[in-house]
Amino acid sequence: MKRRDFLSGAVPMAALLPELINGYSVNAFTMQNSLVQALMQGETLTDHVLVIIQLSGGNDGLNTVIPVADYSKYFNARSNVAIPEAAVLSIAGVTGTGLHPAMTGLQTLFAEGKAKVIQSVGYPQPNFSHFRATDIWMSGSNSNQEVYSGWAGRYLDYEYPGYPDGYPNASMPDPLAIQIGSSTSLTLQGPTRNMGLSITNPSSFYNLLSGATDYAPNTRAGKELTYIRQINQQTQGYASVIRTAANAVTVQAPYPTGNSLADQLKIVARLIKGGLKTRVYMVSFGGFDTHSVQVNADKVTGTHATLLGRVSAAIKAFQDDLKFLSIEDRVLGMTFSEFGRRVRSNSSVGTDHGAAAPLFLFGSQVDPGMLGVNPTLPASATVNDNLPMQYDFRSVYGTILEKWFCLDKSVVQSLFPPNINSQLQTLPLVKQGACSGVTPPPLPPLQMAITNFPNPFTSRTTIQFTTEGGHTLLQVFDTLGRLITILANKEFMAGTHRIDFDGEGLPPGIYYARLQNGIAQEVRAMMKVR
Image (cartoon, rainbow, N blue to C red; front, side, top):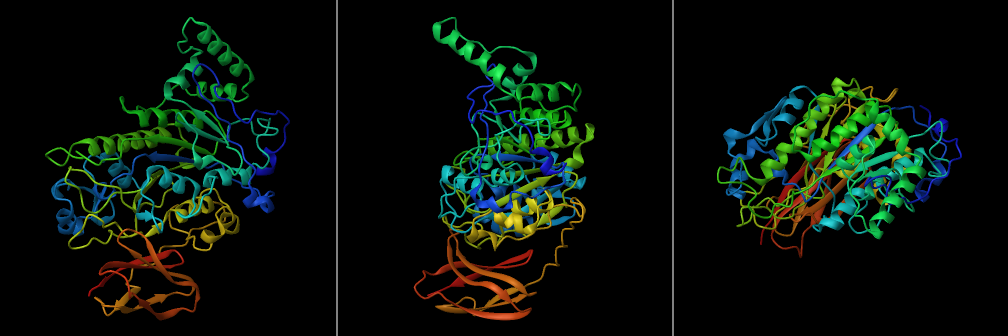
């Protein structure tokens, strides 16, 4: 449907409604986006839906996607939590890399061509605070800047400028975004408002459908609470359309029980099939802050295994349900966590806050397999070592906006802060033809495009790299993931080039040179010695 057809209507809606009905907590996400004032007249022909799964707490990526080809380095760095090599699950079409043994559901999706893993996703200067790192991921900002709007919220503001004035209306009667959880997310936040609805929990959702009432005490405060719920039920314009959409679906494929993520995704599938035009859904699943007792004695079971097993089973059930409901070609799913964990495990049989980590995409329109290579692991990892970033998470977002929501590249760039948009890569994440007239470029064959000499070096080393021409970015990071310097960030002629890196004053250790050219990237480990 054309965006301009959504913009008529005159039913005003409050900017904030604390509760919809019977414990069904609602926040209305609206925005006025100063970033894209000049882009208000665009239109997008798509019925695509994005489902975002937040893995709260910082998922241990090295025990999720296991570098089998470098197993000895992996095991030496974390022998007290390392998954036994024989237990690692294979990934269809991928060699030298496997999945945690609890992730049989995702393994099946890989075999069906409906899953993709992106290796070592992160950003320069990573922040290891849960709250700040979450804000960075949700806003799509740099770690040294405060951005109070979310990347998906800015997209929705571009599509539906002026919301909530005149919404819901005949052309767009549905929520623009829905989050299942007790609080609204910065991901869907605009510069001044929010956009969408927040469903407190699955129980509240089913209370809404059945007309059941959450318990309220027979006191003065309880009676007032009941009255507020009744008033909000009467005034909330989206209650009836949500109920209508949900009630239109009476049969779904089975989901695992005792799995809160599966409970949330079951609701999402029901609403999509029921006819809601909602473009973005967000769900969350916590418990990934595994500082201690991450595994049991067998290393295969334990806290982390339980978490990954539930995530994997929920995603598999959701994808099966989308197929059963004949809507799977419309839906793309994505996982993210605010950070990964350190390369080296700790003495408490756990892992501490780290930097880059793998990210999963799933859906029938995903370009399946693995993007990137096994992360570079040091021969003797220290407690401070982090995985070097291969892909910037903003490039993942940007590619989804361009290749799934079918926005022009110039519009996508305008939805990110100026110091980020010029560095966005278009990645091979979605199958060709997902957007009419838009074809993702093929991934170039992996080749050694960057090296340095001497290596090891004492104070200076020359970095040699090959570029196909166009914008080329050359960065140097330390093992904490901190950006040491940007050696190149400009247009280059195609060919081989050399740039000197002056490491005078830096302490001895491992440093990573990261080359980005178009959709390709490569990381080179460099060692400084005394």
